[in-house]
Length: 297
Image (cartoon, rainbow, N blue to C red; front, side, top):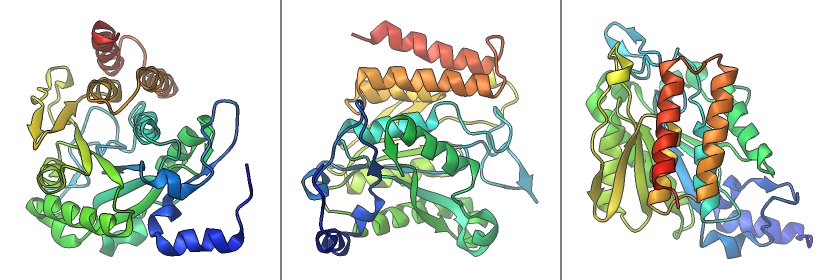
């Protein structure tokens, strides 16, 4: 790989803050090559994600009747969902060999940042980092984090509007041609934020994925809403990230091999969590894989 001068690198950072979110590539036999970030920037895709009930389970914990992050009780509080970071990595790398780091839009209050901040040493950041390193991309993982406020934390109705506002803030510092995929859940107004993204920016937002979560003690019978189309772009609901990968493939946002890698990682994650074949969560993942096998080429 040719070396880049310090002056050239500084110029890249100054002309576009979004390039600060690009990871470093470890050149291996299987890794992509990106020599000039400017030539690749036209094809950049950034995955935007929520945290609670999207990356990890809230456990359905409440305080004074206010959910502390979400409503999911399928997994224990703090558990990272099987295959989630492999899914997001595959989305970013599908359209560009220079995958952008994840951007986080969270309802977590800025005022409580000292206690709720996503730190590099957190389990979430560590798992995201490992997903990139396994694919030969060092430094990929959690990038910019845009927080909410106490007002949204108390009043659920404000959360969607705040996340959409933060999305517009994110766009203002990225290259104009950057496209996005939004991944949230059905528990904290992420659907409202995603709908607004598609209504106002259908040329830039490829689609919205919503993780279906529930307080229902009978997790095996949670109803999955039907998918929708807004201005030609999909709003896709899923119970597992294998199911999300299948739908991403159907909409041209992921390759066939990428779906297989998401499934492989999801199974590894389940085993690490001690979840076996007789568990409903394993059955959910397997069921979504079987649905993929029915439609795969």
